[in-house]
Each structure stands twice: as C-alpha cells, then as structure tokens.
Length: 506
Image (cartoon, rainbow, N blue to C red):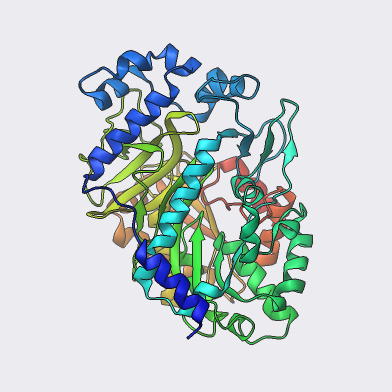
C-alpha cells in the first residue's frame, strides 16, 4: 500500500462532500438564482431587465421567467455578448479575460462564449466536488499518487484585437491551471500548448513511458486514437503494460457506449468509466457513484437550471423551441422525461439554451444523463429519433452482429423521383461488415424499440440505406473539415447537403 496514496485518499474522505446544510435541491437552486441576480443587477443586462426590482418579487423564479426571455446564442450574442468583448459590465461585472470558441471552429464566425473569473472558479469548484466523490468508488491508494492525462484542446490561446484571449474551453482551463498542477497533470502545459494535433500526439506518445498515469480524461474518439498509437509505437499488448495503475477514464462530450468494446480491447484490466458534463457553458455534472454512468447535477456552483419538456409542450416537430414553451423547475421535473436544458450562469448567460437534451435518472440524488443535441434530433418524417435512441440502436445492432462501430452519421434524404424520404446512414468501422445484414438489423431494431419510427417506416420513410467507411477515411474527412483534435465532437445528424458532400468524398 502506497503511503502517499493512503494519506491523500484519507484526506479526501475526511472532506468528501460539500455540505448543503440539509437544504433541498430546489432551495439550493433558488438561492443560486438570487446570487446571480444580485451580482449582475448593475450590469447593462441587469438594468435593462431591472434585476433590482426583480429581487423584491415574492416568487423570484416565476418573475424571472416572465421578465427575461429565453436566448439562443445568436440572440444573446447579437445584443449582449458581442458588446462584452469591448466593454465591461454588460451581462456580468467586469470584462472577461477569456472567450471560449465553440469546439472545432476557428475564425471570426466562431461562437464566442464569455469566460469570467467567477465562471472559472465555478468550474474548479465542480471539479473539487468530483474529487471529493472519489472515495465512493473504493479506488486503490496507488491511484491517488498517480498522474492524470487530460487530452484537451490546445492551451496555446490566441490574443483577440479587443484584448481578451480565446480558445476552446478545455485549453482555457489548462492555461489557467495553478503551477502546482504540474505535479500530477500530463502531458503538461508545454505539450498541451502545441497547436498542431498530430504533433501534440507525437510528443505525448514519445513522453508516455516516463509517466505514471492513473486516470485519463477526454473525448472517447480522440483518447482511443491516442492510446492505440501509444500501444503500437511502444510494442505493447495493451495500455496497462505501460501504465499498470491506470484505473479511471473520465469520458465526456459524447456518449461512451459506442466506444466501450474498443476500450476493453486495449485494456489489460477493467477501467472505471466516469462520465462528465463539461461544456463551454459550464461544468454541469459528473459521475459520483460506482456502477452507473448517471451524473450528479452541480446545484450549488453558480448555475441556475430550467428544463423545457422535449415534446409538444416545449418543441416543434423538428426539435425547435416553441415561442412560449413550458419551463419546469427542479421541483417539477420527472424521471425519464427528456428536457431541453436552459442555463443562467456566472459567465453572464441568462436563460441560455445550449442545445443539449437531458433526462433525469434520479431525483434523490439529482442525477441526469445527456440524451443528445437538439440539432441531432432526426424527425423529418416523424421518426422522432433522439441521439440516445440512435446510439442504443447502433450498439444493439453491433452486439447482435459481433462487430465494433464507434461513430456514425445519418441524414434524411428525399428521393429524386417522388416525395418519399429515406435515411442514409454512414457508419465508421474497420470490421468486415455485411451492409445488407447490418442495415436490415438496424432498421428492425429501431422499429421494435420506437413506435414513431415504425409508423414513419410505413408512411413517408420508404427506405434505409447504408455506407461503411474506415476509420482512416473518416478521420481524413474530419481533417479536411478542420474537425480534428482532442476536444472536437463528431457529428451524428447531418443536413441533406452535408451528407451528399460526405458521400462524394468517401
């Protein structure tokens, strides 16, 4: 038993959980909203919506919803965040030192999310809560004296003409690590600052034998590629030949299930998989108990949440928000229902729709799962396929056929000679796949598990087509689209035009 690991683990156990003073989740959230409004009442946004008088309302949450509209990025940026790049006290006190670029985008057309000092502190606080939950998993002491490999976007931030720095959120976080993080953080700030993804991977692969990695964090597709490269370059049977203390993989960004088999194939012993919900807009949730991928919602960390039912009460048939959707509070939600997540935060986001859908798997404790993106909702002809449903169908089909499929893309295309539609699937795999068998099994699986899809297949959705491409072909496609890197999320649902382009180049 490692003495240092034992001491660290004991210290964490003594301070395991944040104390909420016996308060209910709903009251915690009301207090968070009050704190946000108090802090921002003298900003331009706060004065425009008169936060000062709002704070005197008897039902603060109800009045807040009535007074402040729901914003998407374009609306909030056009009126407020674009001004925040030049002037202080627009949606949050002061002028942000950082703006997060949306993953995989560059140039002046990128989405830019303000990252305030309070916001960075809130993300660190959620990270601390995650660390305090680690004793729940009964990890070996050796883990607590090992290092953590975080596969982030580049920490080499760019300087904007307005004075702030910008980059992807994971790169901003790494660039703000305190100096003592160097004791356990890998690959270290120097390598993390390398902008070129392939060069960064080469450096990590070269340095890997010098490290004692106990935990890895990053998006599954890119972590998997890196680990395979390390195994191949150093002639290993599996990654545990190099890092025997590797115990934890903290996933995030996309659903893990389609990658599970590949991670098992490169591991010499089981990994504990923890999920995290870390976006440009906040660090919202993390796995806090063993045996599940459910994530505990961060309730006391600078975020106020609203939940819009992802059905006729909140969205139209294409998944777009209604003009006046129902908005539920934490004490109104139910388990199993899908919701569009709305967030107000200490970054100066107010009733902001970030585009994710979630469902509650538990209300005590408050735990969620991400079910997809509103833009990944496939419903052109009433099929009502969420990302979660498509992920499950791909996993079930792959399991039935004994193959591995990590990524997939799908689009609804119209037949040229009539008004009917078909679903065009592209799956990414290096296995030998019988396309007819796979597409028929996938179609049957979706029809058996989803009534709306089954109805659509008997009406306007007349066919399902499939193309299989290799992983190297897919990664080449992503590189051409400038979608290559440690924090880039791959698409699930494409427009008809984008799918046509993919089919042409692959």
